[in-house]
Image 1 (tube, chains in turn green, cyan):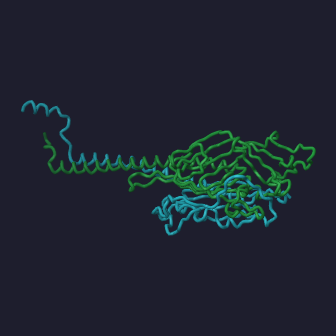
Image 2 (image 1 turned 180 degrees about the horizontal axis):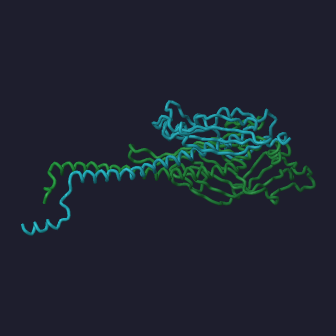
Image 3 (image 1 turned 60 degrees about the vertical axis):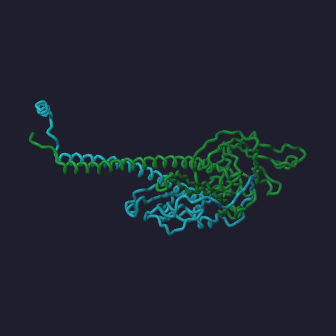
Length: 270
Length: 201
């Protein structure tokens, strides 16, 4: 043998290098695991927020009216199809000929087949929850029910104009209920409507605080955030947060072109 | 002893030198780099997907906002940082008509106006140059992270009663360099019509 093998110094140096490299490999592995875990959590949070917002945008864009708008819960009635002629409850009275107005003191009613869509976050502190999907805190659910939105002219308002809606809550049929997102830490909604006289956008509180103001609501400002923290506080918390406005196209068009859209839809003389 | 000598003659290698060990370790260390890059690219892609989704909603909400304002108010605007109230004062001041509007319409149901409660999730600073931690973020404002984003509106007249509207969102992931590179952008285009009868003449 020409070589004598390695000296002690060489072995020590190699061992030192090996320890250095191995420690780096282990540290990388741990860090990689953290990142993969964090990324996985982030993707889950993103998927949840995406599911909520994609559905909300579709529902609010197609909304006929905001029913029961609250800060942590929103119900909209959205078009399901065209107005069904069979669902017109016309005045057929021969004695009271104020057609198409009142049937023995009752108003002519136009019945829109609609989908009532409800969004809410489950929260044990909120005692005003109607959702059929609840339970775990921080879950945002969407519950869709088929029903009829009755539109009619109230005796108090301007004659021949639809100015009131009514919903028979007992006659709703459940279509779908789904949990869209979990670990939601914030789900807040703020509503805005158009002033009936000036067409100016204003907060729902300024439009009015009575039940009658709901029909003027045209837009919702949604602030949603989800987070999935780690037990170790030193680790970064995966978070997803979105603040956005969503408009009802019907209200946009009615407000922009009241002479065409609003009156054609609501004027019972046509 | 004889047997041992005989055995050692069968060994194909005579041992490894220090230089060989160092080279092998160097190769091993180099092999770690792509693994490391792969792990970090996952985080980058997830973050980028998050920013893209925020940009999508910034573009959509701007488009809806533009659809809601009067046709004559549609005007181009240079890049503006996304911060402050989600419902701007400017938007609240636009009045499409001077009065004499529709009749009131009512919906039965519980009404709750205003904005209350909730906890802030994103703190005022994310430690990056693009986010100014001195800007206070309140309820009803865009989250601090939205300071990464800038929004531009381009409006061009198309024919007698249409306007071509393009909303561009750009954002900065790392810092000022992204700004010059214009690397991350999201664009949305649409036509907005003037439905007033006078526009058809």
